[in-house]
Length: 234
Image (cartoon, rainbow, N blue to C red; front, side, top):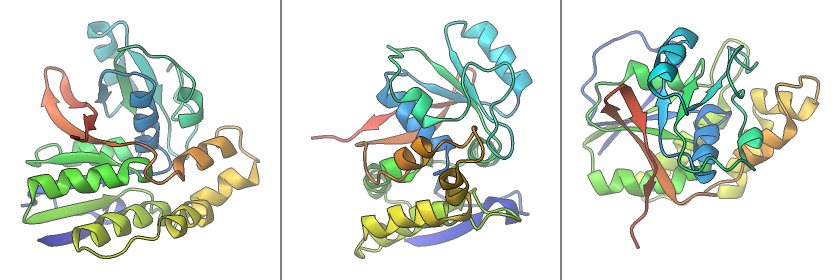
């Protein structure tokens, strides 16, 4: 198996021949998505813009809209911002979710034609690893989305390290991975407590390695990309 590391902000080529692509966003898109599923969401529809979300809401009027602007501020007009702590105690009871974010969702859209596409974060990294092993791709790309001019993106690199280590049968130090989330450039902004859009509760929920036992494959559905939880088989 060949493993490729790709930073979304450095990606220039449009074409690729990966058998599987894992889009990683620990803080916070795909941690938020995992908590939405844990709260009972039936499916998540990633969309690129607020306008697309509004159009999709006409077709899915019972959907919960979740979105954030670059930097993490809530998207105006959406039900919730991109915040796992806001979803943690909700009871979504089979409701669909429409998700629009500046990093993780954009990676999914960029690689929408991949034969196998997964959304991942550390809270479901182990399940994602086992789902990858099950499909046994020859060429897998780990797409990190958190690296920007003012952010090292180490929270996403930590998740990529987890997946790469597992695919190569190497040991995984989960406590060290959780520390890297908290110590990352973006993680320290949550710790600082100076931005109400970046609550410390979100950071702590995102740093819970392997909290959930489902992967989050992304497929093409009736209204575009759709994400559903893939529970592990007993």
